[in-house]
Image (cartoon, rainbow, N blue to C red):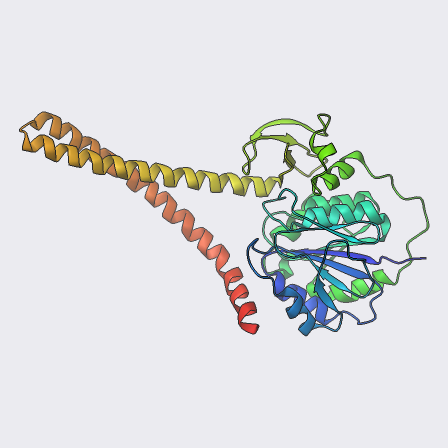
Length: 350
């Protein structure tokens, strides 16, 4: 009788340190395969397998498409590819981004739940926003086990807190130091030989969307209903897939967003609009002043005064927008500084 031998782990900001600690303290005789998604830049070079190989005793490698899943091995999602689990092997795809990421955590969790049901353990570690929440919910629906790093113990509490607040019946909420032993125990705990929960149509469709299955993409009868929101990535209508406490949206082409990520993307879109407005006001002010100077040279003083007033008004409006942008950027710089430092340290270690 198998144990919980498929362990899927998701992490984001602060994840290199957390994953290194976890792998360092895992038994080399672990009777389970581990599959990891860490949010990484699409065009970067991932050194995570080398970092984790040095940290622990289990073999670590980037996953390859079609690779057989073996117990006692750690598979890491490569940059710009979703890591998906099929029965017995791995799929890598460049399907639509989920929560603005590829690789994303939700597709890994969802496909593992579909393929292995009760045998799956989903682990959400440190990170911002809410990737992993919907995937962990799918694992619980299929009878798997949910383990979440305690938010107070995480470098960034967003992802763990979202999972705890939105997924019913989290099995274990633990500090990072206790997670390795918990995974070993779960791997050695036999899974009851009961009938597996039937895979819901929603999980099937969303799993296939990550593989860009054309039958699903062209299917007019999808779960959910049209919302009033537009997809930040392609501009299409977002369909509301909310279920129980988890607010989720997906567009026709497959881009998917949990609530916090969608809000963050809308904030980014607002910032882009403000930069465009700032540029337009600065250009308007500059052009109005040049025209006013020409009017003065021609003794058209009333027209020149009107243009100078218009230029001054544009400058005042631009100053307001500039102030908003500066305040917003200072918050983002503070939030991202620790993650930047962590990435630099990881590169320097190489």
